[in-house]
Length: 239
Image 1 (cartoon, one colour):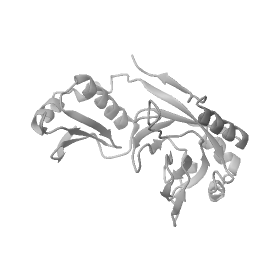
Image 2: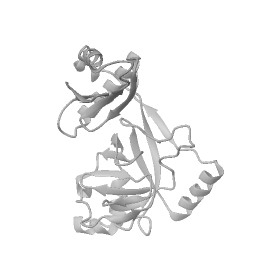
Image 3: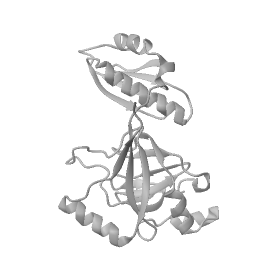
Image 4: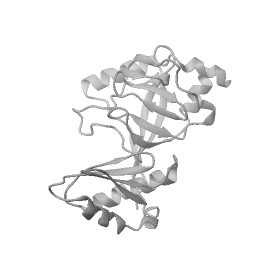
């Protein structure tokens, strides 16, 4: 564990220098541990692939106090802690106008159906959120689906689009520019400030994709509009 002051009101704790599930588990456990310490003055804790940033109120605490607290944590014990996480089901309509780049994987020797089957046959770890609020960077993508980003990014990608960029897969919560290969789209709002839980997932959760057809896509849209749709998820882990 390496601790550096990131800004006047922030400390960064580094756990490694590579994308690794074990490092992510330690970061998630560390966040859980810090939250349990109920330390006065901490405003927010943000995870990245290899580090954790603690933002704090400089009028209620200081970097030296927090650093001493972090150094008192038993790093080796973090991996022994069983943390609850959710496995969240995201329905996706693959191909067609929803996933215009799914045919690009013919270069990888895969038919559209093989891409769908492989992409939806995984449980993806949410390593971190970034790029925009609610954009999840997911690990666990099959190597056959790895693909360099588009040479020319799109100016406009619809909200809910599911794509692949390099070794990762993820989802666009909002309409935005982007350079990932688009496989499909979910009708489920990934970011909704009117919902009790604004973002459906957090670092440490898992995502599974369920293929749906266009009729189900539109039915889910109607259920969401009428307030009848409920996101399916399962809680796992914990002591």
